[in-house]
Length: 495
Ligand code: GUN
Ligand code: FE
Image (cartoon, rainbow, N blue to C red; front, side):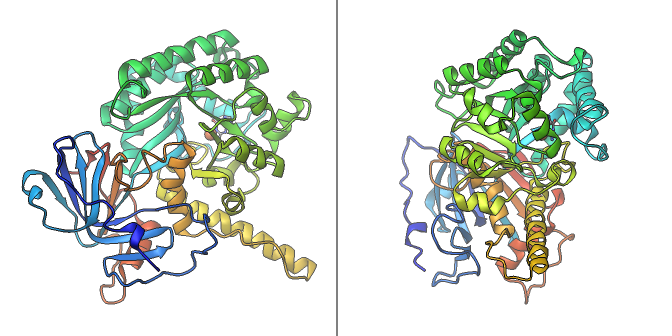
């Protein structure tokens, strides 16, 4: 396989315009494209004539003993085989140990920051209805932040630290109904230097009287949060650097939002060109409730009617999307946040993720704290692989029952597809593929270094570098996150 397009394309010219401030030396791994972009199937490792690049799949090269240079603006200016450049003398160099891989920072497309308070509990209910998970756990936990600014600040600091320590550099955060805690979430993200989309949750029906707002107040407080984000983090169109925090239009889901509210939010999102997030076709109970309220229409149709399906929309779950709804998402280039762990508790089924990826839907991964209890994106990757295997088991048992060979195509995903969804797939989902998701020149340097520690056994004579990377994907936890960088700045680890 030719590697020409991966190498030596970008020779570094020392150019005063781009002052190099930091270089990382070691092993790198990133996705260069969509796993199913062309009809090569990523079934086996491809060895090529270059010893310093090993392809785990056509879309996933490991770059051994490479160097990546970051400029003052936090962007990648060079990425190629290690060469002892003269300019290395004048910059800070981070040399990685031999059993470490610098990966693009993980992108969590769905996280309810206020729910981190009870993550790891509340695994015993249906999502909706009287006495359901939302009513019993989610709403009270979110509402309680209204009266406790000190506790809220502490909680959000812990959320940002927990995600950064697990290598998550970008997060799509649901806040609370109240705007003040959302502002505190923005503060925590900026304090620790994470990248985030932060939304005020909107609800104007079917929510408790003391955790529901009139339609207009939802809009006013949303606008207030957007302004706060522009003031504290900068506005994308006016600053040369990519801001760390972006606004997010966040209707919770159709059952708690009137058509008037959805329409007003859709109009506002369009007028300001904002990202949008919500839940879509999540579970059987949710789908039934939505349809009862909206005359049998599907979630996707309703959202589309109100202008909420755009290239900047991230829709959580989508487990019960019909084929026409999935097609509508493709046409509008709206993305799906696959939250496999949460789906095991609420969704009554797993997302047909491979099929959606093959059909060309934009799909990334989310933790769905606290519907899913684990804030780690590596855990979300493993759950996505397991979820795909449960679908395969269902397919096999159906085939056996009918005693005929199944013509259905594979549902299986492996760690390489999951790694794509956690990195470049997330960047595409956010329409940020020109800025985030891999180590292309000109992108922001958002990265996590995964390093083998004593919790992972390496057999030096048996394990290839590809094996070691796979071990990290399947076994690493926060002990193995040795460095995290956001916009070129080190935010975790001592250099
Ligand atoms: N649907 C509406 N709100 C929520 C929430 O907070 N979590 C999950 N998983 N689904 C929802
Ligand atoms: Fe959720």
